[in-house]
Length: 151
Image (cartoon, rainbow, N blue to C red):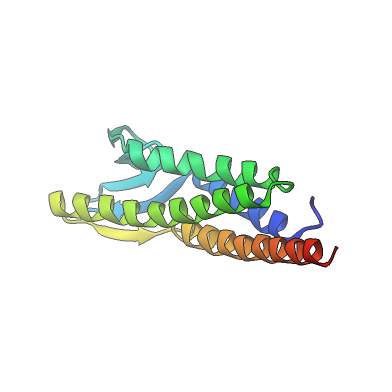
């Protein structure tokens, strides 16, 4: 199980997605000295109270590592593992889109500038790693089907 390359890719997705559950994803500065942070728990002042809970983003951020971890243990059922991995890809890309949506909506209410953190790139890297895992699972599936054909 661990010797397969897709397991390593999915394990990297689990680690990166797990890191997104801690700390700030983005920092937003409104120019008056107040810094807001977009985190797993929601949108709020940095180190302070939560201004707005963002439940869809919270659910997606929690589902990505769970689904990737589940996909690792589905190595005997390649078709199901491919579906889980594709769902992880879509949710990772959905994280990017939803995060951008919330930043734009908050920017309309209060004029803010975005301060990028390293964690803002994690959903994109997770999506790329999940895509690489999907390709490796597909290659394994094609290889196993060709061996069945030869028997």
